[in-house]
Every structure is written in structure tokens, then in C-alpha cells.
Amino acid sequence: MENKDQTENVVPTMPPTPKKQSTMSSIWEFVRFIIVALIIVIPIRVFVAQPFIVSGSSMVPTFENGQYLIVDELSYRFHAPARGDVIVFHPPIDPTKYYIKRVIGLPGDTVTIKQGKVTITNKDHPAGFELNEPYVVNIDRNTVPITSVVKDGQYFAMGDNRPASFDSRSWGTVPQNLITGTAFLRLIPLQKIGIHPGDYKQAE
Image 1 (cartoon, rainbow, N blue to C red):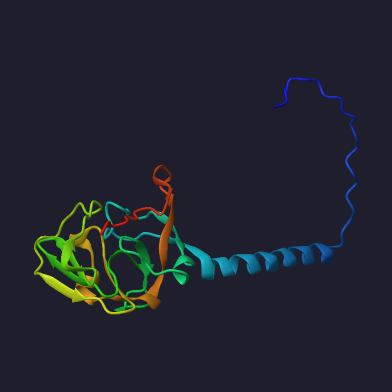
Image 2 (image 1 turned 90 degrees about the vertical axis):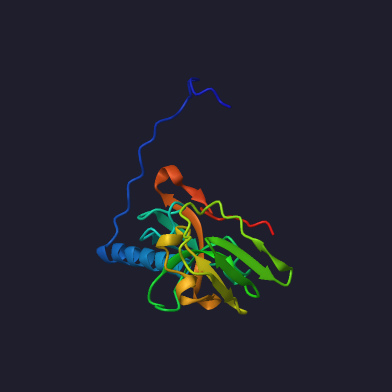
């Protein structure tokens, strides 16, 4: 590492005289910059990632209202969502909206919810196993027992704030083609900035 206190011998030079550009040339440079920016930005926004602001309390305490997220729209083109992923999607009851929930049930699962506990039954676990859900603080114990069979290409999704979440318990499973992507980065608030915020890999 160089010692920045050492004296350096330099020869002062006059700055080069800028060349005069015509107004039309300046306009063209600006237009060209905009075109290049759009060519780069639009595909990224459409196919790779886009920002979302959390609205509501269905994912508390994992995500609070007003938090700013970047959603990865690319990964699920190469692999399927995993149990525990936080996803952003269009709910089948209203494809014009976006919801943020957690993947609970995968294709081929039977999801049973009783007294706030979630049990998964599938070909690998014919006797079923209970999900470990440390992300759930507010447990909804007052709902009637629910059993849902998750078909191929579908996912069972729930909010972490179970009593305040309108999710697959009410309107059914989420088709994979309605899933926009997974929460990749939390930018705001700064003290909670992080990659893959809220993801929890379930041991089965």
C-alpha cells in the first residue's frame, strides 16, 4: 500500500478545450442514452426483478407494512418453488392484484390444519409430519380443521400472521403460472436489509 503522505512530482496541465457540439448532436446523444437505458432496464424489470412495497399485515412479523422488497422473477424459470419460500403472486380470486405469502404445501401434498398446527402428508411421508414454523408468532387456533390436496402445478400458501391472512385456506391453491417470483432482497428499512428475507428451509 502506497504512503499517501509522500510528495508526488506532477506536471500541471491545462484542461482540454471542450469541443462545441451542435444542439441537434446533444439531443441525439440524450435520445441515444434513453434508448440504451430502456433496452437494459425494461428486460430486467419484466424478466429478472422488480420492486414491491408490502401492503398490509398478513406477513407480520416477517414483513411489516411499507417495507420495500426486490422480487426475483428469474429463479423460478429454472426450478420450482420450495416449501418455506416467500413468494409474490397473483391470487386466483383476483389476478389483477399481488399477494405476498409463504409456500406451505407443494404439488402432491395433503395439507391438514388443526388448532393452528400444519401437517403435511405425501408419498415420502405417508404418516405425515408437522411443520416447524418459527416464523409464525400469531397462531390462529379458532378455525375449523382444513384439509387440502395440492394438485400438480399448484401450491398452498399462507401468511405468517395467520389470524390476519387471507390465503389458500380461504380461496384454494396457487397455480405456478400466477407466481411472479420470490422475495430476493429487503431494502427498506435499512436496519433489516438482507437477501432472501424470511425464507425458511423446512427439514423433512
